[in-house]
Image 1 (cartoon, rainbow, N blue to C red):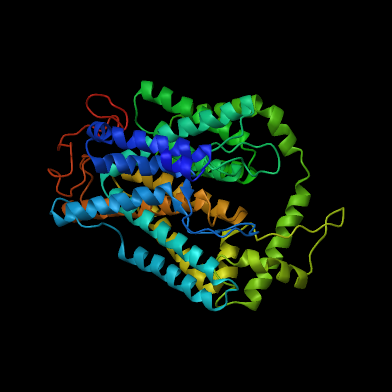
Image 2 (tube, rainbow, N blue to C red):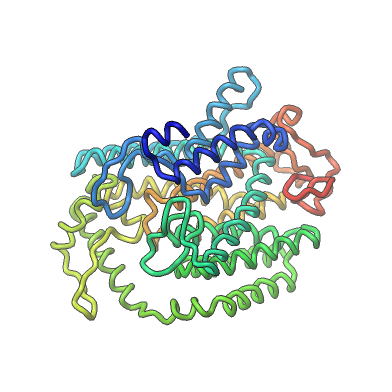
Length: 499
């Protein structure tokens, strides 16, 4: 507090420093509750996906419309770094398993980083490119630690449980903001052009994408074999999530949720485990949500969408012109904002009814990557996504029902995120961290499946819920005769622990 007073920092820093001190004081108690410091940190990492909190030790005050202005140290990066240090110390003491990732996926991520670094040859501002490279390094570190801890069944169940809790809290916050008109978020006031609320994030589209992905996991749990009491809890959370998603007024997330829901329903129909009541609940909750939010939903639906389509098409034309003139190296990572006006002047654009043309970077992450790092950069990024998507599809076809169901949800989430990336740019945003987390989760899930096959071979599925990696050392609780009546509770009935 003395430092804050001396340097005249604002109240927000005082609040966060106070919370940080409280967390440090409670860490021993919380670690005991979670079983270990690693479990607590991993749960905190998952929960932090919705917390757009960070600081910039190096920052350039400049008129930059999007992207990174400095070296942003996010909360997720801090937690991932602590996890890495914790693993390293335990590994040196031979008390931890080797870092579990995937070689091909690591090479694809490294290729994306290297190609992005090469784009500095064409960049107009090398400092901005270095900021972008730092972000990619941060994402790779977060993804590596996520993949390592998601390569166990304990990690799998942890992610799904914390996702449910996060969905509940984020949904309640957005609903509360809409009722009270409270605009404050962890990152400051929302930058939306109209009155839209974004929960703990800076933009409503990021909050909507986050809720959309978590709803897929909640639907997967609701459609699976859980007790009635827990189904009621899950359906309640789903309803709140649907209402919050509608209140974000984000059209791309609405469409993505619709597409993803159809994919999840198709999967459960194919394996013939879904009941008609689950379909009825889903449709009913969506309809009730639309009715309850129609007062704000109706005005959004009745807007002139053709103008938005013209704006987005103009941005696509500008990006295509960048790619056409810089196909190999692009204009430089994190530099599209600095040259977009130049290329806009050289591109024939469509004016709106008032004769106005809005110039901005393209609202499409794939085209943005291609325009900044060239076509090779886009191919590397697509390879990263493709490897993770293939891993999720392979797990979806597994005989293990928990792996199969989680694989289906991850497949749906990745497809929905691909749709979201086609509708917006996410560099420097919380959605970028979410994307890499989901991709690394899929790789970790495949590691579980491969470890099971190495242990048992392609034999018929034998029911157990512990990962085969040194079960005595890593908290396995399963036995050969484990009953899979409720895949998300332990013998004491606690939600989210393997039975």
